[in-house]
Length: 328
Image: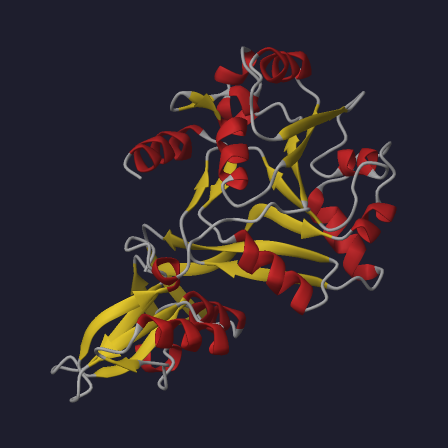
């Protein structure tokens, strides 16, 4: 689904007759049930997809898409065989409307996992292609309509400020807040209380997700969450045989198993109310803030993401991300 960039899988039988479809939303619902992606296709797919007969007018396809809030329309012949697929993006001119939400980029850490590079450059300025990481992140958000960014700075803040001051001409606005001393991965959010206008997005400066932010924000608002974490589906390979033991007796031996887990991707949607929990003076990590929010009765949700996720905060991931992004 991710490699094809169509965000849909068409399920057919041996005769290419349409059996169902699997979309991003279908996968997300499975992950929210606590399942992994090794479940049978029949448990994931929509067995009654909206489709049109081959030869249907484009206007009929547009009506179907708008009426049922879908993004794909399979076309089938008289025998029910799939002959084509119409996409929302092909039927409507896609123009991202300018969004009101601000994007907060947490760019103040020392980046010790990328040492010794970060002894010279702060982590946000490490190159990814011909641009620094932080600018690549901003450009990707801008492509989806975001036009206002706030960078929280700390380590080597002057290098970041100088880059954005001297190399201007960008189509979006960039503002800064600076920590006087390290405040952890969430402490600097307390410096933003007079700057944020409403719902805002927070991202680490070392993660890039191929993510539909419109879908993320819609999910956040639909469920009435105060804070939504993006959970990336990550596969972990255990390079050993795993033993399952009960009362000292071997129950099973699984050779080099793979596990699929939802991990914190370092991207969040936050309501301004949450900032009341952060003083702007005290050291606090994001994990602590999330726990504090839950303890105070705030609604904290998870948006499962099964697309590509680049964690470029450590050398091996950085090298792999460079290769993948260059072949994008």
